[in-house]
Length: 412
Image 1 (tube, rainbow, N blue to C red):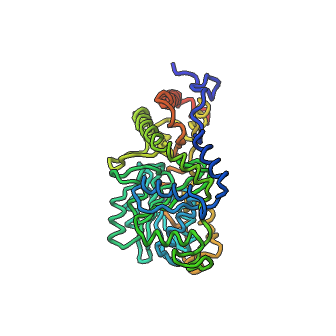
Image 2 (cartoon, rainbow, N blue to C red):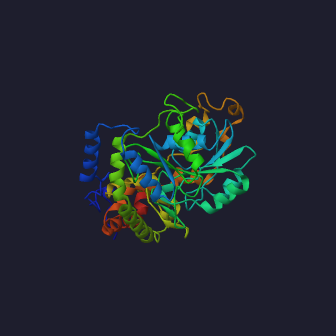
Image 3 (tube, rainbow, N blue to C red):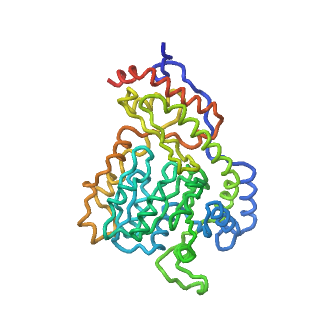
C-alpha cells in the first residue's frame, strides 16, 4: 500500500534542509576586508575586478573578460559592441528570463522568437533557420539551466548568414560544449552573477570574447565611452558607467575558488538524479546530448506530462513541497506572451518597427507547453549535497506517482 502523502497528513519524506545558498566563509571575508581597508573601492583604482576578469576569461577559454554591473547590461553592451543598429532583428528563445529579449529592445532592435526543442529546452536550430529574414543581424542562444545549446548548428547558420552570435550563458558558468567553454564559442558571451546564480556576488555580469576589437568596444561602452589613448573627459560613443565595483570583485574572486568543485558536484548529482527519475512514467529530465561535455546545472530541469504521470503539475508541485522538496513551475508563460511584448510597451525604442510588430501572432508551441503545464525546476543548491539528497528527491517523485490517482481526485 502506498505511503500517505504529506499533503494529506502523512509524514514528510524529508525534514532536513538542503544546502543553503550562497556558500561563503573566511576567504570572502578576508578579500572583502582587504578591499575595504585599501580604500580603493572602484574598478578604476583597485585590483580585485581586474584580477577576476583575467581569471574568469581564462577559465572560459577567452582572451578578454569585461565585468559589468549585471547580466542584462552585459547583453546590451555586447549587442551595441557588435554593431547592432536600430530596428534590425535579433533571434532569441521564448523560454528564458525577460532580460534576453529586453536587452534587445534596449539596443533598439527587434526580438524575434524562435521556439525551443521540447526535450533540451534550448533553441531549436531548425526554428532559428526558419526565423531568419533579410533584417536578421544576430542570434542569442541561451544555455538553459546550464546545458549548452546546439552551438555547432547555430554557428553554422550564423556563418552562412553572416550573423553575430552572443551566448547568453547566465546559467552556464563552467559549462562545456564538446570540451569548449560556454561563452567562448560565439562572437561574445554574457554571464550573470545575480544572487541565485552559480557564481554570485549578489549582482554583476561579465562579457567574454576572443576578439580584440569587440573587447575594445565593450570596454569603451562600459566605461563612459572612453578609449585607451584618449584623455579622461573624452567620450567617443553612447555609453555609461557600467563598471563592476571592487567589493563585488573581491567576493567573486573568492567564489571562483569554489566554483570548479561545485560544478563537478552539481553535474555528478544531476546525472544521477536524471537516471533515477527517468524511469517514472511522465517524467522527462532535460535531455543531455553527447555534445554537452559538462552541465553546470543552474537548474535541474524536467518536463512532467500530466497525462502520463496521472496528476496535473499544480498539485504535484504542492505535494513535492509538502514532502520537503523545494520546487517551482518556472516561467508562467513564454516571453512573447509577456505584457510588454503584447502591448508593445517599448518606451522610446522601436518607433518605426512598432507599427508592424504583433507578438500575438508569434507561435512557439513547445515553450508554451512547458510554461503552461509541464515544466518543473529544482534550484542549483539542491544539487550541492550528497547522493542521499538525490535519492530523497527521487523517492518523493516515486511516492507521488504511487499516489497519483489520489492527487488527481483531490484536485477534482
